[in-house]
Image (tube, rainbow, N blue to C red; front, top):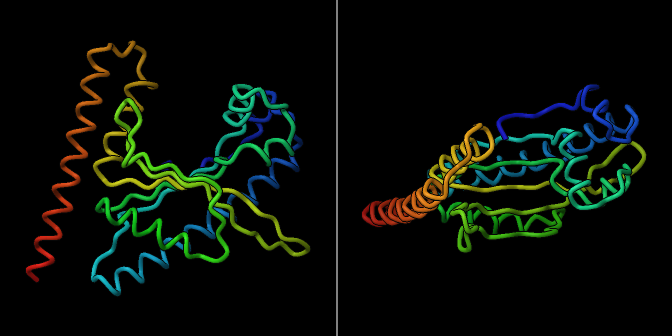
Length: 218
């Protein structure tokens, strides 16, 4: 998620059964939803900084899933290739990644987001406390937010992923190694990657403890 990915005519030609007007509508709705949530996160971060004298969020990125990727996901899940089905079933068309300083910052942001009256928490998965078998750690939330148009209100889901700087470093390079390289990743390399993820998590915990010790002195 290193920026917004715009849907192009080339994506449509890949076979996704939507009209250009529907593609434009989708882009507008999910872009609005991501912008609303990014604003909420920035406001919460500013309040946190006011109260705690530091910013819990290092940076925020967002992306709009390409239609060819949506199409492939629908095929993978045996869903009919229809626009309304896409709107109802695919919840990660709009995605936001939040990089935090410490693990506790992630949980603090989750708690603050849950207090937002206009956000509906659709689903959440704590991969920090319960990492994936390959070592991946992150906190995932699907939230739904109302978008007010000139004549109607629409509820749009957006996926939020929250990680520490260290978790993001591992996840980004692990993704490149698994999906961007031509060579097959060996079992030995997979084991080493999982071990590195565990070491990085322990480093995150230690950094959190050091911060708390220093804060207690001050």
